Image (tube, rainbow, N blue to C red; front, side, top):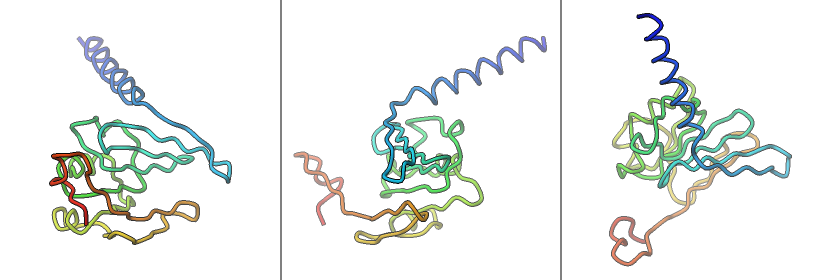
Length: 149
């Protein structure tokens, strides 16, 4: 009976590792020769890894099992729509020292994190900086979801 449970648990672990490694990635070197890996999860969800540092962008549980991803040093949430803001996914990739960076509307919903607005710049590390830029839909019929300005 114990062997059955051990095999079941091992099967689940292997399946989770396989799923975590099934996402498409892109890898490149920076001018400082640091390796950057971008993991494309789905929709706006990405993970950027730089030499052991992990940045999650718009983690959403519908797109992946975030309990199997490495804990993030930074989590960026672009806006408050449910396909970009998921409290459960954020909790799954957070550790005590994780910095959450989001827009004001998202902060109003989850009551934590550092707010950035369009045009703001922030240094995450000595080598990594981000800038908030406006984004909007240009596809006919979809402009209402992310209107210009």
